[in-house]
Image (cartoon, rainbow, N blue to C red; front, side, top):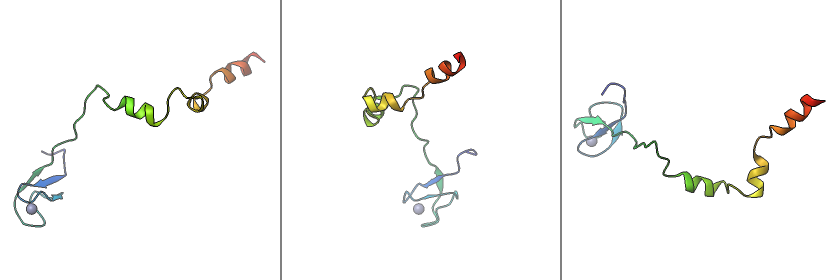
Length: 73
Ligand SMILES: [Zn+2]
């Protein structure tokens, strides 16, 4: 693969940028890309980490109402 530079040794599992392992000299091939899904499987965990829907979270959101009131003056 051309676009992926990270290589994994087929023998010892060491990571490197060369197609030959720097540790044991065996051939290395492109490391598998990270799994990605359009469905956000971690969304509920991330919401929990940011305590979404708590009062602090609501107050941290950008306020568009303040700009609208400035235009009226
Ligand atoms: Zn190796």
